[in-house]
Length: 220
Image (cartoon, rainbow, N blue to C red):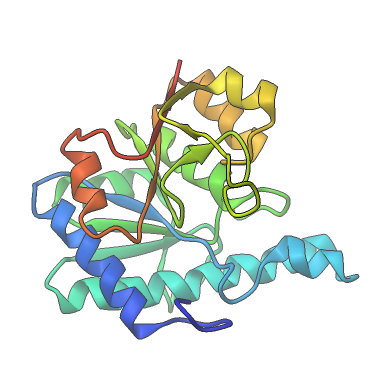
């Protein structure tokens, strides 16, 4: 949403598309899981009295809107893209079918997974780890607005220490809120390496893909 209070910033969606394209041009296969917090966040809706299931479904639909916006921005740059949703809406996007998603990747298309897992009570983080496992991704990149993981909130504490490398178990033990615990546990069980990095720094996606030590690395 950029500097807006909600919605989609044209400048930000264009920037994200350029960052994805820079990594795509290296010849790597890219799948993306998009959140919807800029439009509606399910857990926030449930906090002011809305039924959690209904709120989460609204949040899933918000991710579809973002996914279609990102698809449009990528295809404007000549990057072939397919959106697959965990909730069937055939006129809008393809349903999530694993073999079809893998085939798109093999054909050189970026695949955007929308609508989370299709189930309430599961976050976008968990959806990202799940989809990464299903397509046998080599690594999961969590693009965020901070440089990586800190031992406390750097926005609140000036002495927050940056963490370059950490294990899944340490995150669980210290209750560090980089991803929800379900997502971290799933990644740990399947030995999926994670990198948390700042999307706002231009070129970071490409740098991470090229193996440069950007952000925080999470593994065993």
